[in-house]
Image 1 (cartoon, rainbow, N blue to C red):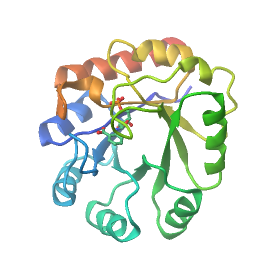
Image 2 (image 1 turned 30 degrees about the vertical axis):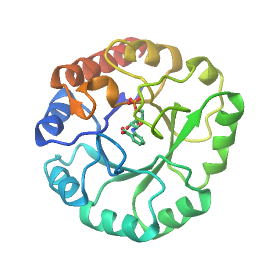
Image 3 (image 1 turned 45 degrees about the vertical axis):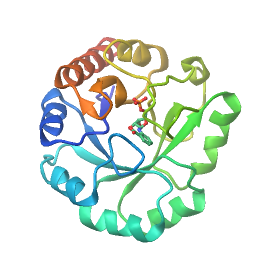
Image 4 (image 1 turned 90 degrees about the horizontal axis):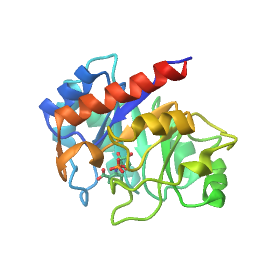
Amino acid sequence: MPDQLIKICGLSTGESIDAAVEAGATHVGLVHFEKSPRHVSIADAAKLRARVPDHVKVVLLTVNMEPKPTAEALQEIQPDVLQLHGSEKPEWLSLLREKSNLEIWKAVGVKDRASLERAAKFKDCAHRLLYDAAGGALPGGNGLALDWRLLLNHRHVLPWGLAGGLGPHNVADAIRYTGAPLVDASSGLESEPGKKDPAKIAAFCKAAKEARAKAA
Ligand SMILES: O=C(O)c1ccccc1N[C@@H]1O[C@H](COP(=O)(O)O)[C@@H](O)[C@H]1O
């Protein structure tokens, strides 16, 4: 069984990057979206990126960003993965995929079986689908969990990940229940919006790795 993939998202300080790396995260996420309490500027994201060791992948999260600023952000930050967390269209993903070596992840808000099925439209243009809860004040990072029952017996058309409302308290259940190969958490690992808690990051990674080991 492959190792559990763990993404810690919304990191905005060197200390929180170090905490995620130390805890065994496989992916660290940088949010470039001004409405988010986790927003980092392109210059700061590039500095944080430089701190991440090679064995950990850097995910840049954007929301409906226009092509020109996207190109500038990618050039400056050089992420490994681009996570599109808005209403981006398959055509845009295809273009990004054609023009770059990036791994492209598409976040999809899931509220019912139909919304899950509709994600199949990204089959040929995304490398991974990230299921998040639909709704909330922001396009993501709301701490809302989707109904995990929707994922049972779902035929996944792509590699996938589970996001939305995950934290140290429920990540083991999430892995046991859904078999998610990748888990992604942000607001559940904070002491206040935008401020990551290193102890919560460590507890989340430990619980996720132990759950995967038990499932093996
Ligand atoms: O974190 C944010 O502020 C954010 C803003 C806009 C789009 C997505 C955002 N975060 C991502 O949403 C999911 C779920 O987050 P949470 O664990 O429920 O807080 C995750 O991928 C975040 O990185």
